[in-house]
Length: 326
Image 1 (cartoon, rainbow, N blue to C red):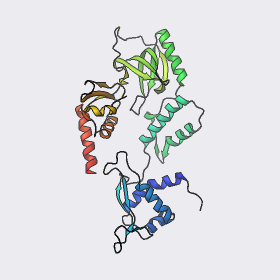
Image 2 (tube, rainbow, N blue to C red; image 1 turned 90 degrees about the vertical axis):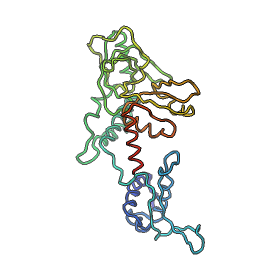
Image 3 (tube, helix red, strand yellow; image 1 turned 180 degrees about the vertical axis):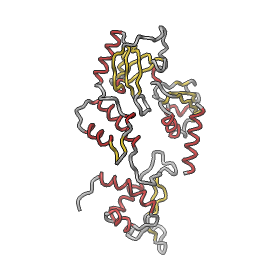
Image 4 (cartoon, one colour; image 1 turned 120 degrees about the vertical axis):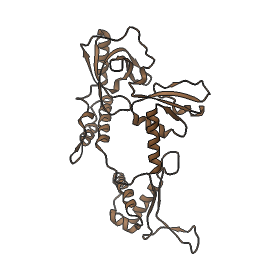
């Protein structure tokens, strides 16, 4: 029998667990026949799936499948597997139905591919091929137009050249920008103040943002279009650049926790710690969207507590309650 490819196994994994959940008590022989594989292949699949778990090894965060028999007449520990053993899915990590990519998820991947092409150039044929496949993800279902970039993104060098021209001439810029933590491109008029090259080569443009009416820092690799504008400069004479790295975030998350949890917020852009070193943490940081903030809070709930804003706390409690009820 030819060696099975990894792609074929992954494709089977995506439907195997939901199918087993829908057919409790099915035998190894019956399940193998349904998927057109040998019983030994199915047993190996079950063993591999059963070793899957989320980091942290918390209860309910793993896949637990029983597919063996115990010969109690001789020894309770005498476990064996044969074709007539029944398969029982105890924990499935919520894989209760076949996994299928949705239009919104495909849209996020399309945006990521455009940003990647901006960074690495257009010499990789895999990028346009993947984009073409994702743009039409199923019969009658296509990626929403509002998620797609407006034309081909410029190269980083072209963006930098336009920024430098703006700095030299004092012109404003009209940019299409993909903010951190969001899925839609926004159009803004900015007045560049400085081009900053950070360690590792990451380039940022500090600029007065007309929409935020504050100084913001825009990553060059997230600028999908940059054109000189005829708009007259309107920025104030005195500027506060302390909040530039907020990246036009939609909300600011407030957290508290023990001093030992400092690692959880270390390196977050725009994070402000109000407590002294070694004391219990009181801090805040910008978030690009409510959904991102909720996911971050739930994944760090064992070390930090989100105290505000109130609508974010309500969303976190609701999501946690739904998870517990599930």
